Length: 67
Image (cartoon, rainbow, N blue to C red; front, side):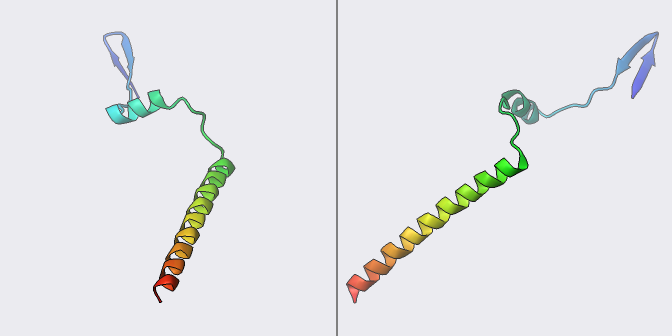
């Protein structure tokens, strides 16, 4: 939207919150493709699954020792 006042033309700009402006300035990384994002998520889930399996095995060993 343009506003014309006394021969001057000014463009209306949208305002960003300070937080969003800082995020844009700090965001030097290139955006990841959808497949790269999914690969990262899968890796995180696999690591979590491995951690939970190890924890379960430790608990089962501990329970067997008690009986």
